[in-house]
Length: 387
Image 1 (cartoon, rainbow, N blue to C red):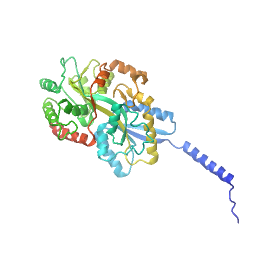
Image 2 (cartoon, helix red, strand yellow):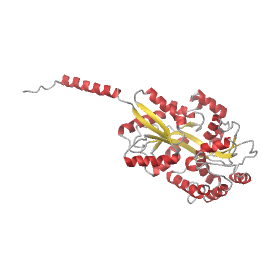
Image 3 (cartoon, rainbow, N blue to C red):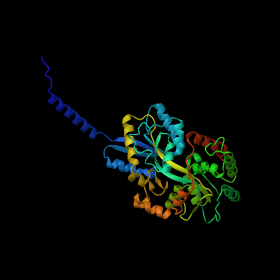
């Protein structure tokens, strides 16, 4: 029996039917679930934009959100990697877990491997944000940026003459034991800024080398330790104690000054004092991908990342001042932000911030290995002195 060979037209029609069936099946497939874990408080700035992506791409993707203390996340990711699982698809992290994850080889390399999928990085960043993107070493995409701090936030009813130098702060702290507080630097943006700014403020030998260049810094922190009651595990606890007036003064950064006052955790009339010859220790938060994802999932994550870097979504990161200003992309102004964000910044922002940001030098945090070492040394030499 002879087998009939399909004509070219029949083959085309058959192929079209198969292709249409595949498209129909894909259209009815369940959306891809993307599990996002936030260890930096970043969802306050970005969740609305993620939700906007999901709404504007119906049936394509579904996001789930969870939070985790930074020190607890990396052991979870290591355990999943060893088990061959990828339950966490994207992590929103600060410089702390970014650094630890790079050191431990947990993050998926993104740049330059996916430079075509992530156009405009670093070209579209503002100058300070572009420098902060370098800290990612290609393993993450910086999504928000802040000049940060440190500044000293204080209760004006109890602190009549706020310190202007580290030496004045030490004298004030000794005269008011237990009234100055800061959180452990490995889980606190203000704590990190305070720790890494001190070598500049004290004119230490090498601000980039915590092992051999921070002799003055470690000696100063040990003296300061004598009048500090304890070190909370995070900044939220610090702000709560400041608002309750258990403590009177703490190092802060721009966002941690604005947002807790907007939320009513800290009284609106609390003030900030810049330090003489101040330096801005910049801060940023990043989108990173744990290793072990499928190609299809990585492609989707890259698409989401690209969306998050567009000006409209970047303008949403002004939010309620939590990471002031917020946008990492150049040219995204407050006038482009939602009206609610503009109102918060006008009411709770500081008129001096933009002038100070323009006037004083900016420095990036330590690179990954030096930052991890600085945290270890602080924990051993300072944190361990309090139980």
